[in-house]
Length: 227
Length: 227
DNA sequence: CCTCCGCCTTGACGTACGTCAAAAGAACGG
DNA sequence: CCGTTCTTTTGACGTACGTCAAGGCGGAGG
Image (cartoon, rainbow over all chains, first blue to last red; front, side, top):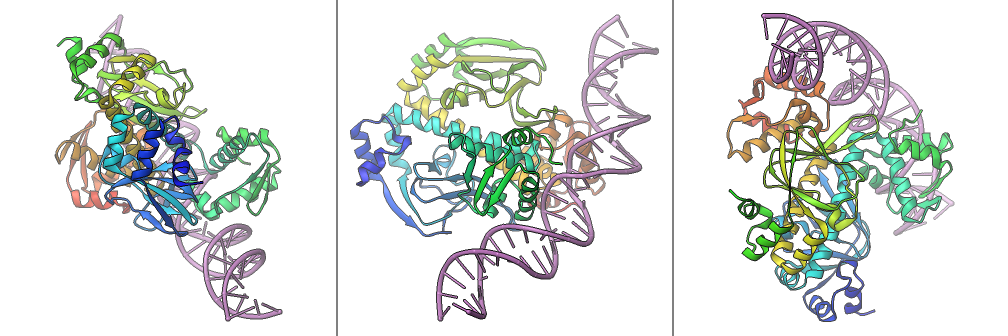
């Protein structure tokens, strides 16, 4: 698979005419990052945005005392860092790789030119941002209206859905990362996993989680309590 | 001021050629809502989006047991409800008026046609969504990394900035609403306001808040503690 | 095979904040 | 001017979850 084919396969660029894909290929910068590397930090000037070709990237905010809240985790085909392209010149959060990753970088000015020419591209970008907004809205919802067991239950159900309703889930991130994504800390997550196991709602084996009682899990996700 | 002038004054439509403004005027629906009325609810099918002409609107999520978390409060000139236009067919949150409000409604299909013709409109929409995304990101940040006093301090500083650094602030929403916006409850907010007053950081008189010690307030906003 | 070093788990403990309850102001209509 | 209702305040109390600290466990490397 050559570069042009990679680009054409990115969902964000779906439905674009071939000459636009070519133009994108012309302006893209192909970059490789090692595991745990910083891609950009909050406040950095944004000169363009990224698409994940392979690997995983976390977007997060961190507090002065080192705690961090993960906002998103992006995998292959997903774009990040577009916000400052349209809203301002600096990144509103940090981005690190979670594993070795290949990223496509699109420089700001040349990309904006393309958008202005191609309405389809603009529509795709609008769609991407809207979905992002929707995810953040549910994150806020979870953080403020549910306690940790509820968030965790919702997360498992979300994973299950993404895997067409499967009962066996594979965590793709470490439990520490998961804790940060849920707005808590590893210790708390660990305790809750133990509790949910002991109640027969799920079974945990390393990174493999099996849903045993979907009913209870759903109840929990709807703000039910773990007794 | 006639309808066309109103429309032309909306930031979202800034820089559009006159014929596009005319087209917008053709498709807009002018609506009036009383205080406390529901505009749409989470899950409702979205047939278009809104712009606030006058009044105030809150966007919020609510939990089964009646608690609510406000995501945004929009005033004159601001748009809301665009997300499902691009990401799906239903609204991801609820919208209620906070006071009597006049809203412009733009039907989905006809508006999308306009976007496809006019890149400037697309760019404006992208800018609006990006700014929204940025706000939500800081909300998540605050909710998970700061305790309530820190969030409140950050909110006051934000208000002050919006008023070019003034020390006298006017709360435009009730304290109950403010509590919900900060992800807490009126009781807690009340106690913290009392504490901040007694420490001479601020003075509170009804809806008027005066910043007495900006230094301390900034320290607090950066995750400092209230002793 | 053993050691080192992340990651995960478990326990004891403190506290910020939510809940429940009651009362005092404000706001509003008759 | 007074009842009704909503908002805000204050107090007593419970608890989910964060902090601190000490092991277990498994992989990587010598």
